[in-house]
Length: 419
Ligand SMILES: Cc1ncc(COP(=O)(O)O)c(C=O)c1O
Image (cartoon, rainbow, N blue to C red):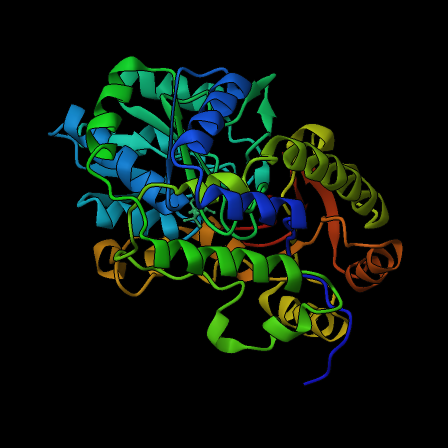
């Protein structure tokens, strides 16, 4: 193994002072949790918040709560291209995954298809603000209100981002954030549920009150993982964990047996400086995104880069083969460029049988061609220049709604389509 400077795809490391607060959190009882709850509800302007062991666990708790309010509705409508944790939580909650294809240029739910996909079985729609790019919340909320369907806003990747001045996660009926690896405020693991609705809050509280606190051994394990992540995320050390396949870094897996627990006071200690970390990381990412968009010679910067709050910069290559070549070279150069989810949700082996005969061409296309570029504070001028050199030849011709789009012909469509 060659140790060389290697960028991670995302990085929001904890400082030694954060780790110290985590240690103190072991002995803080519920004091740290109460303080965190006050801060989160105050900052996001919501009445209710809960803290769970992960974003998946938050999703699971919300889904169970919504189901208890609408027991005859059993389907959860999600984008056909999203993190595999989303269908994992739906299956764990005993509900059915329903899919809506995406718009490949915005990575958001396809608005036209969404209108046709919501039916009397739909419990909720889950917009996901992928990479921090705001979903079209206005039209999604309007559609769902008309049909009596909940909007569960999955802001796992978008904490701190805004849409029309409102924080992502607060626009739907109920929202969640993730504090897991690679997220805007990474604290090892953790999830946050927020809602302004007293009715939904009552249902969530009933689910939440039966959740166990993690034991001391689990907390110690989480603490060590968070400390190791903060150390090894540094570019001079990242090639070490990146070379260990059993760590599954950057891999997304479908697993419906994940633990569902509360957040511990140790985790609350690690999180104590969340607001400063969130705001500092967002401003770095915005700057990096703006510079990269200019260097990549995109026709223009997508929408308002400063409001998109990208977690990583999504970039469409012109073909799967081209993407493989780019990723191979980027890996040798240690540029932190990665692919994302390996397939659309309908092709996840454990649940593929439910979608036999259905196709989701835009999700398939994105799964084949998307790469993401790192935007964190370890990315230097020279790294961006290398990225630009590597990606310049990719035929990017325009930008729309947050993702660089390319001219391409989609199987099943005729002529040159913009997808
Ligand atoms: C869109 C989305 N939802 C939910 C989750 C689950 O969050 P966690 O990893 O904290 O379980 C993730 C995690 O990557 C995600 O990207």
